[in-house]
Length: 210
Image 1 (spheres, rainbow, N blue to C red):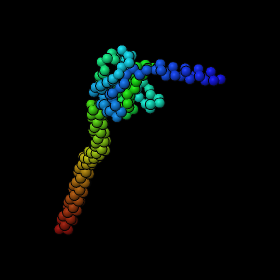
Image 2 (cartoon, rainbow, N blue to C red; image 1 turned 135 degrees about the vertical axis):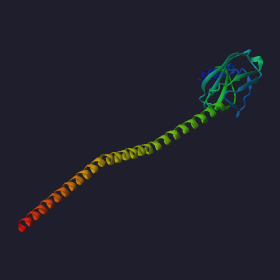
Image 3 (tube, rainbow, N blue to C red; image 1 turned 180 degrees about the vertical axis):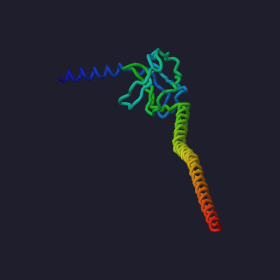
Image 4 (tube, rainbow, N blue to C red; image 1 turned 30 degrees about the horizontal axis):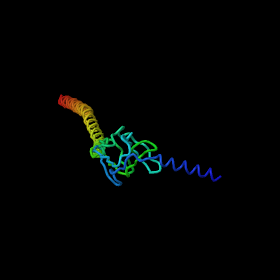
């Protein structure tokens, strides 16, 4: 039993000893803040390898880091630094880190922050302003629509009133003409009747004289 435990312990020690840190990172330090679209300098000392197989950008909690992208591969460890141009479209976050090397020989940087590019923020604000302007224009158009409809209705009403007045004018003139004709006819009949009566009276007087 003791021999088995000793063998397991020896294996564990050998495994730990086999894991070597390729470099000791000096930058970025924990709390460093970068802006997307700018450069990040990754620096190190004490390289234990001639070539750093790869540099990865990782993200997440320390117990479950997830790869985001490969920054570069096969870096000369003797250079002691590497300058990375952070893509402008990199998502903002406060839990980024660099991973140098490949398992099991890996060195990690401290957690750092990447802020959104200033151009992206300006573009977002410009888009929001354009949306607000569009909404205001739509609101003004919607408000003017009822007023236009009301004006059109008023114009239609005025046209109908004018048409009705024009239609009634001939009828009134016709009625006035008919009334005048009837009055003239009645006056003629009265004059004729008066003439007949006067002639009768004259004839009667003449007969009496004879």
